[in-house]
Amino acid sequence: MAVSRMRPLRLELVGLFPELFSMCVSCCTTDELGRCGVSLDADQLGDYPPDLLEAHAQAAELFTELLGQFQGQVAVLVTGLMSPRGVWLAVRHRLPTGVTLFLDGRRLSVGLADKVAIREMVSRELARRGASGAAA
Image 1 (cartoon, rainbow, N blue to C red):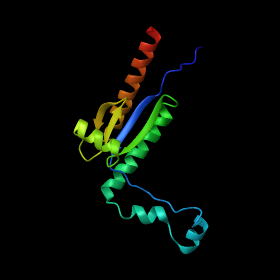
Image 2: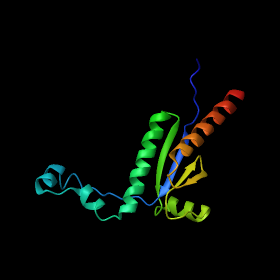
Image 3: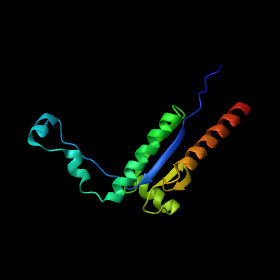
């Protein structure tokens, strides 16, 4: 059986996601922070609105499922809407402020509500690529 050397399908999620910052490990070790009762992640996430945290949790869940289902066949990219690439995509594709999924550079869906449909679209694209690769 021949092993496929096909490039992984690129899934890119564009949206507003929490930014987490960490302390310099040379200056402040995590042991010292723990003794002080400081939790950087929890402290920073507490400043975000619940709908943004919910979108982040849904995206993480979807991508975990997709990576598990399509092992090695998909590459996942997360692009913040406020990053230079995120701004460019937002202007180019007139993106809403929510979450948008791109499949190999093509806009696939707005939002992550219909996970079954997203999985089916990824499966169809992988099947199409496999069929066109076999025909070549």
